Image (tube, rainbow over all chains, first blue to last red; front, top):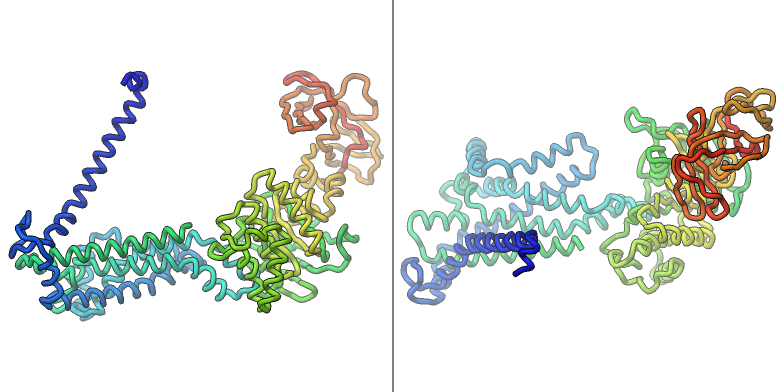
Length: 271
Length: 363
């Protein structure tokens, strides 16, 4: 240990690194513990959720797929998420091209406006939307929820697409054009082709963001529209259906898988 | 400064017919005039370099020729037809970019084939042309690799092969060696020169590096503030600059003020006979290598100054000595290290300029 006495700086380094690791460990534990707990609980068989479970089995998963009460919300969630993801791309793609590649006046404002929802607290945003949607008779309609989810997903998808587009040099398009490609072909065959991984990634982000969304649907879904997160929320509020531990576990794995898929795509593109 | 200059005589390595004619071309971005009614005739097969400091308009001119920017006025004639209104894809030009602009998702071979595919080459002809170009740039072994797997020099060779594959009328090169280190740059200069000689393609080359321009070019157009400050062979620009901008930018010359009357130049209070048609105030350009640091008893015909050595920089075979002379003039001297007696910083020296080494200019 005499080396550390001789090198106080190194001893300090060691302390910092130990503290850093402790912090990291605690954060991970704190973040993951509830998730792990849910996974563990989902394999219990007790009539009420309790820890530790007294019996082990797949009863809750069987319940999810046979009770019939989860199917409707799941399908609605998938449908809304699909429309929202596609809709977000339809808005975001032209937007990032206009903001990054055109000489449109006010183009920087465009991206700013698209990203703005991210800084507004979602509950405040939802209240505002409620007022507007009530005026437009969109409360409780699937169209309305999809629209709300598009605005909710837009900032993230715009950021994903625009950081990727910035990496694609305009010279590539110009090079293709001097070599005889029309503007459209240079754009489609080179720029859009290189943007493809980001587009897929943006789609997944949009999908997850909608699939996972519980606040906007609570405000705007009315009484009729119940997506999966809403259903989970309701079932916890009024009675604790033990099957939610199973559905939460399934959701967690599905979303993790999509996230990994999207980040793999983005890493591949960066290569 | 004259803005209108065209080739008056045949160019080395070129035939005398012109391939590109630029007439009164101008370009403004808002209130800023980047190109001011430029005239230029490019000869078929020549290697023409646009040389100038940043902001001189050289890259803008190249981008207008390529069709990436529209000119504000003037004409662009390729083989006699106005191409100013054509899309870049219709101009039959090739372009090499500073950052190579290779398509990252395609192999080297596919990059080279891109222009041929746009021109609907039949498969067999396309393949043999790609092989040929790979051979020209020595990358046959790397045909199946992605650009990211290649070194900077190799990527630049792919860019060159790609732009030449479909035999463009003119090859445009925008500072293609700017991203390479010095030794690789020197090597690529030789390769570009060789490819130019072998293919006979007309090249318009943009750079801010005067050494590159000296090595590569048949002619150099020196640009400053949107006009041509000089347009001639590198040798003529080097030895007989026509104005002080060309003299300082192209050959690092010293510029001194003098007055000519009756065949006698008065310079720094001394009078020497000169052979010139100029009269009145003149600028005198002297290249650093033409100024000498002398001992006693030098020729009486020369302009001679006393000064103090401010700085000595070793350039390799040459050393560069900065001398602060009497009367507030600073002169740069370059001389061979091996055959020159050493000088010390701060020491007093005599500096001499022979009249035959001076270039007299009106401005």
